Length: 291
Image 1 (tube, rainbow, N blue to C red):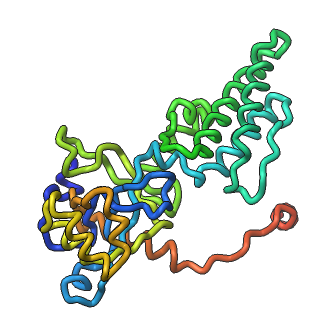
Image 2 (cartoon, rainbow, N blue to C red; image 1 turned 30 degrees about the vertical axis):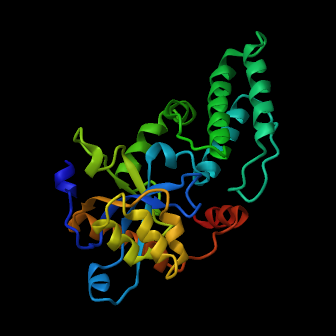
């Protein structure tokens, strides 16, 4: 499967769709200092010296993506639904807007409160399943708020979303879950040095641009000589400091027929103008007028 979608051990020349490891996250992706990334700069621009930079999209595993704040609004909605079904009012004062997480201490208190309700013999049996699912939602929320490197507990997503979870996984693989992520499969070979270790997604809202010369020299410079190159290049660009943790390595390349779809979705994401959503009152009014 990997060879059908990816080119292992790609040539040294830069190509749109190259996948690199050990790239700096610029602090944009969770708390990961180093990430994988897929380049979206046309190869001809780099080879013909029309671009002094290379832009890449960060790549994170599915588990890492599910622990980002991008999931918070939908998790919050499902969590509130479960509490409502159990006849319980949320004890968390959720801040607005939707991507701002609640205080971690309030999540811990809510977990304790719901656990006590669950253990209470007076709690109705029909409410217990809803409470258990709400607890899963709280654990997910706490994970999204954590300042540590984190990966989602898939079992909690399965518990919270129930029968919807299988459909969500399928949507992620088919690139229909969200318009701003693109699925990339893991290597099906035991040697993952030229592929992705886990099923992953490219984050299309987080493009990162770095000097092309740094990635060019990463190909031809040995691990031992890398610090020396960065030191000499620092007088040209202080961005070299961001690459001091490890030398970037080109591990594979997405084949052109699959890269074209990623680029099409990426450009569509930012070329659409969009329009304000109707209010709930307006939607109800319009629906009532359709007879």
